[in-house]
Length: 310
Ligand SMILES: [Zn+2]
Image 1 (cartoon, rainbow, N blue to C red):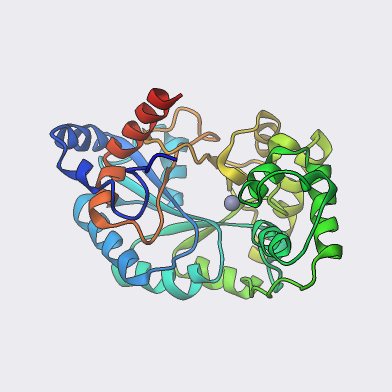
Image 2 (tube, helix red, strand yellow):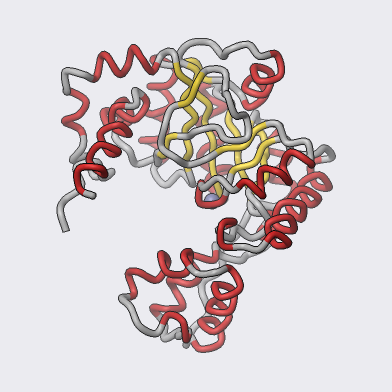
């Protein structure tokens, strides 16, 4: 397999010195950058990224994005919104202090059925079980490295059944993973991290039937409304893919903002507030590479490379 120069190991850093980087940076100033993190595994590097944002960008809150949409007034130049999907405990323990130190707001999208539990994310669990003797009929052939891709590609009832088969056949139980509690959600919100809906159990919505799509969104909506004392107004599509049936349910429930993971910048006044683009980053991304993601150069290069390879 060819080496990927954009991998987070720093091999894409040369893009930082590409002659087009200043042009991309100037263009990006007129766009909205929404950063999609998961957890924070490297607090030092994450802090350096936030320092970069303070210097190069205008961090904005979820409220500010919502207000821009409501008033139909573009956000300020260089606007950046920081978001976290899945919201593991590092959002509370590592991200929140770093954000607060720098006065940067953020948003976290949570999987409601995990809140207050010690259950691992299903994709971590599947990987662990498969490495400890777990078997499932629909996964019997194929390389173990393809496990997650195959689980995500199957119709959702098959994914659930396969997970069940892995659980009953594995030699060991997966390690527990302490998740955020309802009180943690309130602490995050009080610290400037808005809480949004990321469905009840994080299926790929495109693989679910209509009833499940609705149940996944409304189930999480009701739980979050109960815990937070007010309905959430923002949603992040699990696995980042837009689903028109999900968007219809979000509209019914009064959601104002919906976020994709398409690795793109978007307009400073989102044209489709329930389909806002995001850039994928993680806390280990070097600041040089972080700059090229923020400018849109690295995403454009990746797309070009994808086309060139295809
Ligand atoms: Zn997710």
